[in-house]
Length: 184
View (cartoon, rainbow, N blue to C red):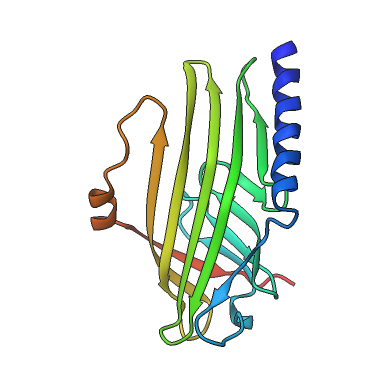
């Protein structure tokens, strides 16, 4: 019980630390040239594949306010930390979100997003997993503004494991399709 309390205190402390470092963690998305972040990108974009729970919420000012991360679940970028209590006694997952960046190039309707998970720590019944990850999404947005077809490149570093092979990842991106949801 003392360990769980210590982890919760640690998570709250990290949350405060992250908030102190950047009071507004929503990242301003940039557009090439003098363009504004386009209105048709504003809203919630979800990956169509159920086995990859990825999603982004772009605000009208171009910030990314929420990320649904395939590993960490739904994260409010302003908070930047997610703590999940596990189903078994003593198990948990802690995720610390790093920078999220978005760039839009209107000349070719290309949207690029980078999501950094600065740290994760999962305590499972079999042992602990610790590491970090970087995910890159890049691809064109459809002419009607409803679909975003991306090449997803996922880099993950586990403590004590071999680093990811960048050449292999770059050569074999995963193709994902995001759909903009019509939510008021």
